[in-house]
Amino acid sequence: MSHKIQYDIPIRMRRNRYSSGIRAMVAENAVTVNDLIYPVFILDGSNRKEAINSMPGQSRVSLDNLLLIAQDLVDNKVNGIALFPVIEGLKDNQASQSYADEGLVQTAIRLLKSKFPQLVVFSDVALDPYTIHGQDGIIDDTAYVLNDETIEVLIKQALSHARAGVDFVSPSDMMDGRIGLIRDALDQHGFINVGIMAYSAKYASKYYGPFRDAVGSSSNLANADKKNYQLNPANIKEAMCEVALDIAEGADMVMVKPGLPYLDVVSTVANNFDKPVAVYHVSGEYAMLKAASLAGYLDYDATLIETMLCFKRAGADMIWTYSALDVARILNTKS
Ligand code: PBG
Image 1 (cartoon, rainbow, N blue to C red):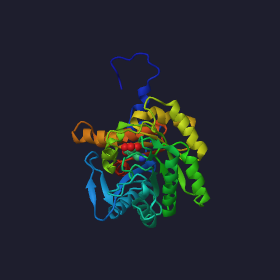
Image 2 (image 1 turned 90 degrees about the vertical axis):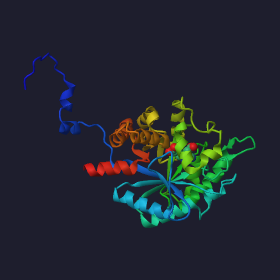
Image 3 (image 1 turned 180 degrees about the horizontal axis):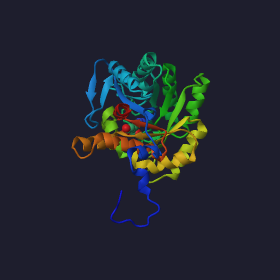
Image 4 (image 1 turned 60 degrees about the vertical axis):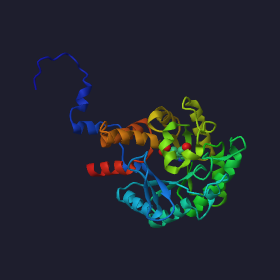
C-alpha cells in the first residue's frame, strides 16, 4: 500500500487496532455472562407484573413470574439473582416483616432454590422496604437511625434468609459492625456456607431514586435522606476504611455502589484488596441509559456493553445490573 506522505513515525499505535481480529487479540478486558447479577423486585400474590415507570423495561413481579425470570436467567447462563421486596401494607417501625420465615423474600428464596438450585441467590439485608419511615434501620424519636438496635433486627433478617436457603446475604444498610455480628450469628447457627456480600462502599446517592420508587420507599422517606449512614460522595479514603473493616469482619465479597460515577472507588478497592469486588450499576444509571436510548439519543446495546466493559476495566469482578438479561442476550447472540 502506498501513501502520498510517509513520515518517520516508528511507533504507530494504530497497528494494533488495524483489524477486528487484532483488536480482539489485544483486548485487555472482557465482559462475560459470568459477571452478571440481576436484581429483581418481587411482590406478593400471583400473576402480577407491574411496570416501573422510572425504570422502563423493569417490573415488580409476583413469585410465579419470578420463576419465569429465573428460567430466562438460567437459559441465558446468568448465574446470579438478587431479590428486592415490595412490601405493601405490612410496614411498621420495627420492620417486623423483615425476619418473618413466611415473608415474601424468605418464600422467594425457598422457591428459587428448590426449582433452580444452581442459581446463586443474593438477598438484601436492610430494613427500608419494611419500615414506615423508609430508613434502613430502627429510628429513635429524633428520627436518628440507631446502629446497634438496627443490627439486632438485621441479624434476625439474615438468619431467616439463611434458613430459607439463600447463598449470600447482602447487607446494604451501612451500619457499623454488622458484618462481623451477622457472620457470628450465621456461624453459631451452623450456616458456615452462607456467604456475605457486603455493600461496603455505599454512597448516599440520588442515583437510587428510581429504586426507591420501585420499592415504594420514596414516599415513606419523604424529604429525609440517608446521609448519616451512607457515604459522602466527596470521600474515598473513608470508603477504603469501610471496605477494610468489612473484610476484617468476614465479608466474602465487597461492593461499590453506585457504579459509573464511582469507577475511581471501584478501581482503588480492586487494587488494594484481595476479595472479589462487585459494582452496582444502580437504578438511576439504568434509567439514564434507557431514557436516552428511548429518545433515540444513544444506542442502548452498544452503550450498555461499553458500560459493562468499563466496570471490568476498573477492576470489578461482578456487576449487579438491571440490564443483566439484555447484556446476556447481546453476548450470547454474538458468540
Ligand atoms: C436499600 C437499597 C437501595 C438500593 C439497594 N438497596 C436504596 C437505598 O439505599 O436507598 C439501591 C439500588 C438501586 O438504586 O438500584 N437498602
